[in-house]
Image 1: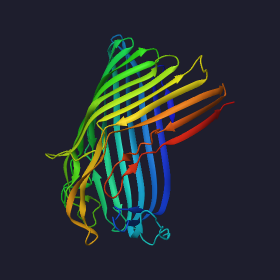
Image 2: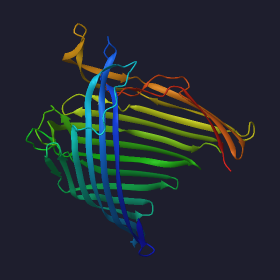
Image 3: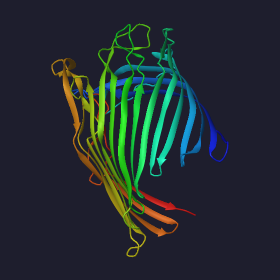
Image 4: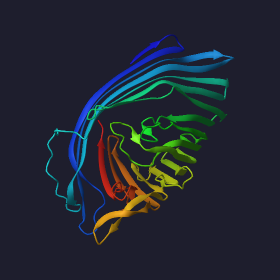
Length: 430
């Protein structure tokens, strides 16, 4: 990192970073749904050998200037990134095993004699960026910014087949706009708008192409922030995020030696709209509070199709408060809080189970896995034995609520949240 002050108002910066590493994995895990009668699932062999190199560079000039009686800020820069990743993997079914009394399979030879996946991925990006913060008036600030990507290239080389594919994206400018206005000495409103642009070059409509168009969208937010009292801050924000043309799988087909993915259609549509409310700080010198509530109307749709997943809950509430006694029971503090959320669900299609043949097959049927609304409560108490010694007890999930922290499919991805737990901590400083 190099930084040079040109004068009192302007400076230049140069940041360079090189990172390299590798890792290897030789293991096994159980996948797939558990058979009702045999209680068996499937052991899979998983082997991985990854090496990577990454170089990033960022150079900019930034500072302030006076114009029309106001001081304004400007930053202009260039950044570039180059990545190389050598990736080898084996993912192979080994056999059945009892999911409730698993006997691990024998350890695999490592490194193996061959790899199912053996590829090198290279990507190079370069762009210019800038941000101009204008102050038309003392209380008003207008921000104009953006990023112009003039290089975005990806190369995938399959060492097993010798095939190499390159994907180049068109030059693209992505703008950003924002403003802030001080309503009062302790209250400000703000707004921002940014475009979204995500390339999808390796996703093909047919085996011979073309590639899908990039994901396009926008991110809009505006809100208000205020200081209700000294050290007590409150904020209210409205947000709306939308993405269009996301890849939706039509079928999985082999494309010979190609490293592209087939076949997809750019029909995915995502929407996220809602409000976010926060209150943080001190109600009194001894009483601290943190409250956060988010309402998120989240949709993930195919074009002209119904919503098919909503893993993000519509309502999310987090409250924590802590009170420290100052006279009576001096040195003691007690606190508690709750994390609560509304229903979330995952839907999809799975093969039906035939109890006669003890097999899974046609027809495919729809499913919906749901986690109903739940709340997890926690408590904390602490005592300051001396200015240098403190003891605290945390009780998390005090009612031992059983819930899914994540939900996935019939085969995997369903994980219980943490059960009731206790943590006793003694801290000393000297």
